[in-house]
Amino acid sequence: MDCKYLVPENELREMKNFFENRDFAEAMEGVKKCLEDIDQVPLNIAVTGESGSGKSTFINVIRGLNDEEEGSAKTGVVETTMVPLPYLHPHHRNVRYWDLPGIGSPGFKPMDYLQLVKFNQYDFFLIITTERFRECHVLLAQAIKSMGKKFYFLRSKIDSVLKGCRRGRTNCNEDEDILKKIREDCINGLRAGGIENPRVFLLSCLEPEKYDFYLIQKTLEDELPSHKRHIFLLSQPNFFHQAVEQKRKSFLMQIWQWAIVSAMNVTTSQWSGVNSGSTVPYLSSNGDLTLMVNVLKEYKKAFGLDTRSLNQLADTFGKDLEDLRSVIRTSTASQEITLELVFHHLKSQGLTDMGRIVTACVIQFVPQISALANGGVAFGTTYWILSSLLANMAEDAARVLSRALEASD
Ligand SMILES: Nc1nc2c(ncn2[C@@H]2O[C@H](COP(=O)(O)OP(=O)(O)OP(=O)(O)O)[C@@H](O)[C@H]2O)c(=O)[nH]1
Ligand SMILES: [Mg+2]
Image 1 (tube, helix red, strand yellow):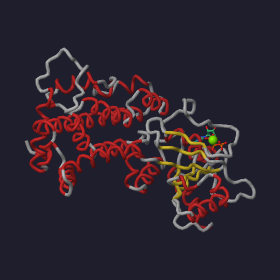
Image 2 (tube, rainbow, N blue to C red):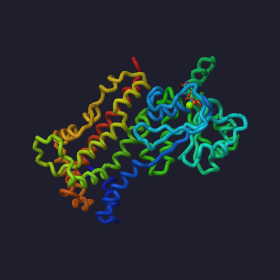
Image 3 (cartoon, helix red, strand yellow):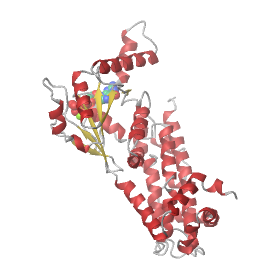
Image 4 (spheres, protein in one colour):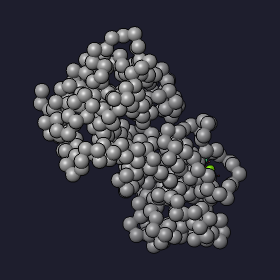
């Protein structure tokens, strides 16, 4: 079988480069560290704006939470707080959205405000408004810039604006024209205030699949330093097919590293307790099952295939949970991911044979792989099981999303 159908060429190239300038032990340590670091990267996002602009609602939606759920930010009329409140992402605790105190009171002093909220701890600022941007937004943006930080303008509650416009006027333009006007109006206002090339995103937290919600995600991802992109991407809700695909690609790039770690772990076998009564002829050449289980659980959460995320998606789009579930085909997406399930999958799919083939392929380009435990067969097994299940779970996520976005009968 042609290797490039099993392992993408760019992956092979990356592995080759990785091993080229390192001795074996150093390479092994390097791989472990890469994976550990990815999980620990902190990301702090400041959300600011006037009271009632929709900050808390946005913080909930972008974390994939309903307003009533545990850990959600309180929305509606709440007591104004004078300190920034952190809201952790339910799956990625290092990703924090900070609900900052409101801006715009008379005599607002942006520099004092930034000191008060400890501006330095944030990766970037999101400035939200429901109306036109005002002087307080401009002053704040200029102060943020002078501190060397980035900011983005979000014009929220676009659904209400469009509704009002459609209702209130007889010669109302099409939605696209209205949106264009709102955007131009915001941009012109900010330019007049002295902001060069302002970027404004239009959004509705009630209809997150519309307007610029995806554009915000994409822009933030592109503009973050590369080591923060993966965690940011994984923490984003699955309202768009592009987001699902981006996640798949980002996960795919890590699989060879997991496969190496898995092969390293083989000697400290994780098999006790798994089907201890059954005979497994190729036991010693399989990878580390526990690792596979953990990685697959990550996929499931990031693709929103766990019960909590499916519930939230059903709620957002007014769909039935069981209806969304009905389009899921992969066992690791529909059932609880356990050692037994992965073990069963491994056996029933003949994945160990594929593992041998994959390993043989990779060794042609990266001979160092053969130095891994059991001649690297565990490497191939883990590589193959993770890449095949990643593809299947990404397809499931895409099917679920299509179902969620279907117009209701
Ligand atoms: N129609 C519509 N309503 C929204 C949207 N976002 C928020 N709201 C509503 O606007 C009200 C205020 O939203 P919050 O998220 O509590 O606003 P906030 O900026 O956190 O307000 P404070 O905490 O008081 O500063 C709530 O009733 C929300 O349901 C939106 O995109 N569209
Ligand atoms: Mg709030």
